[in-house]
Image (cartoon, rainbow, N blue to C red; front, side, top):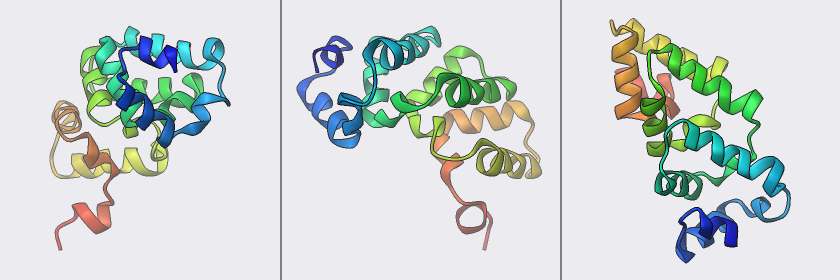
Length: 146
């Protein structure tokens, strides 16, 4: 709890985080799991308040593998011509983007769908930055006109 408060979380944020992801308190090593993820978020350019907001919004992020989940997603976003600052802002807006769906089965097809509308990489990147939750919508049920 003290470590979370040290990230700038207030009591309300700490409570929300623990309620949403109780495993955070016992299943993960502070040194081996939690601190490296926070350091990585800061290396992307997040301020302490942004790290706190990201963890409060989607504490499950702290349980994802850096090498197998988080870094590949960031590389994928960078492949859409986002820089670290843009990636960081996108993650702060919608941290679920980092782990909620399969990259191959869900996120890439949504990008292809946007490109099929005539968007180039920079327009797709701008759309994701402005509306990152769009990447969680079903193409068939939510995005395609009916």
